[in-house]
Image (cartoon, rainbow, N blue to C red):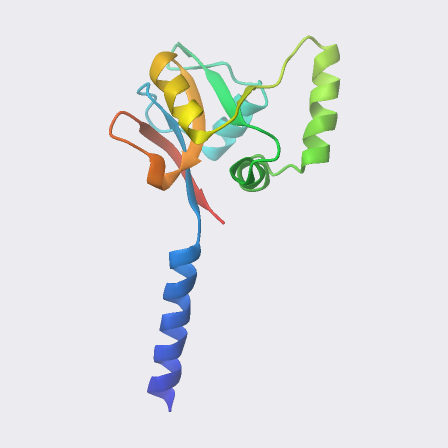
Length: 137
């Protein structure tokens, strides 16, 4: 009975792993090791350079599930909290990161713009991208 329960528990955990979405923050530039705190600062426009490289963070559109996950797990901010943050920053002359429509658009932008960083599903990473940070739902 214990073996059956352990096997059932193991199968359940494997099923959860199969359905967990894995995401990454990526760039074409070589930036070395980057912390979650630094990624958050980059996306909140508080950190503009790493290794003397000007950074350009790219978001997906606000209703995109990957962006919602990024906001929750990396920025630790709700949509409303981010909206208020950027309203305040607007009056200080700061703008939020550029938003693109799709992961394909993010990848194309990363390939063309030096210093651009974005986030995509792990399955969409190719050999030209450097992974800076991983997270999953």
